[in-house]
Length: 196
Image (cartoon, rainbow, N blue to C red; front, side, top):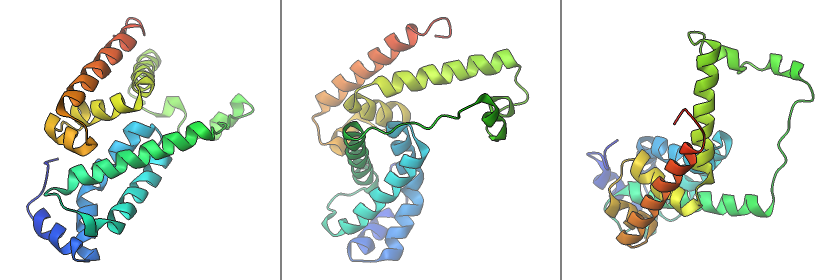
């Protein structure tokens, strides 16, 4: 996805003046980037959905204060802040995960592992799932500030200066956090065994 689209400037101008229709056009264009950002920080689809809605609601409430030239860094900063707020809330009030009482209950779930990809052999499927789980665990183990920089640069492919502006930190801090995030990911994945 490009940093902006052709009509963004005009839509931003109209949205700042109170046009909900113009704002909705911005939402439509950027909702995938916002959701993916929330999903990668929270690692939970339901919470990512909630944060996506919260981010756009907050953006609409404060659109009159918008003073930048591109909507994307602004909405991603709002999204990241909403994620951090939720992570802090979860640390204060941890939730218990509900686990089925018996193995039989898994048979009623349409997402049981053997239905994911029938073209894979059982061994290939287990290996793929192990790799995905390892990557997810290593990513989740990153400190929040490292995770945000890693995601914006290595996943969203944003440039360093845009990330610095988005997170409101110095450029050197972005580079330092990214280096540390990559080193931690590398070391963590190496510790996972032969897959990496």
